[in-house]
Length: 143
Image 1: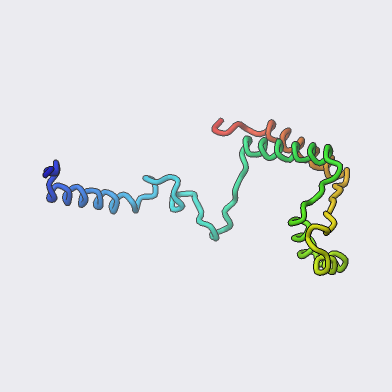
Image 2: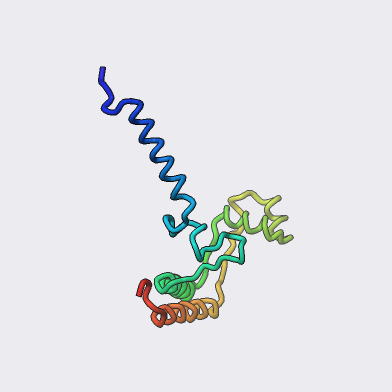
């Protein structure tokens, strides 16, 4: 049988020392600067905590919205499958498609075709470009 390297009395002493350390230092928020109790930090619900975007986050949002706008400009129409058409018809409750859903089998249900307007792609491209340019004008994180 293997003998433990540390006996049970030594384990209890180490546990008691760890408990003493955490109990004496836990009250001091300076030891945990990222905790909500640290000086200058607010908890959620106390004065409305704000989330501020830094330069990298603005840049990524701008790139995402820019590529989404380019995609809307390149796609002329999108045809939904039967499952998505049924979901959309059930949620919108249009009389023509609701009656057709009850009568027609799923294979003969006409698929919904979505035609995004041209202004949607242009507006997403411009918003993405503005976010990218704004991120380049911001200070670098940590600098």
